[in-house]
Length: 160
Image (cartoon, rainbow, N blue to C red; front, top):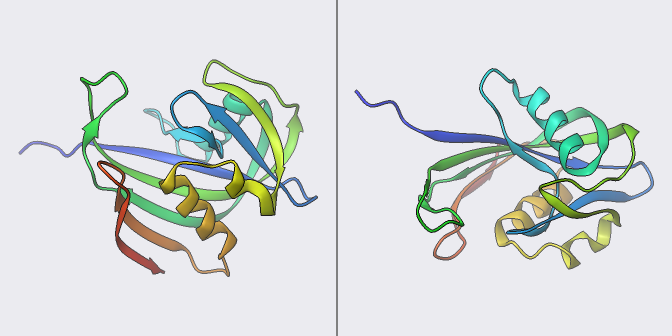
C-alpha cells in the first residue's frame, strides 16, 4: 500500500493588542499572514513559532486554534515541474512576546496592519478566505475544503 502524501502547515494571525495584525510579503503569494510547513520531527506549535519568527522577526506564543483547511487540489509548484500535494493547514491566533520586525529569505516586507485594513493587502483568494474566517471567529473552529487551481473553489464550509 502506498502511503498518502500531504503537506501539513500552520498559519499565525498575530495580534499586537492594539488592533493590528502581522503581515509578511512573499515573492509568490504577495501579502499573507506568516506560517508554513511543519518539518519532520516538529509539532504544530513549534513549527508555527519557528515560521513566524523566521518570516517576520517576531517571537510569538500560540493561543487559539481558529481554522482547519484542506487544499485538495494537486498542482505544479512555481518551478512548473514539481507536483504540490494535498495540503492540510491549521490557523491559530498568536500574540507577540518579543523580537522586532525583520525581513528574511522568504519575505521582502514585514509590517503591522490595522485589523480592518488587512484585506486591502491580501490578494490570494485562499488567504483572504482564511482571514475572513478569523474575522468571523466566535469560538467555533472553521473547517473549509477547497482547491486553489485553476481557480479558487470551496467544496466544504462549516464550523466544528
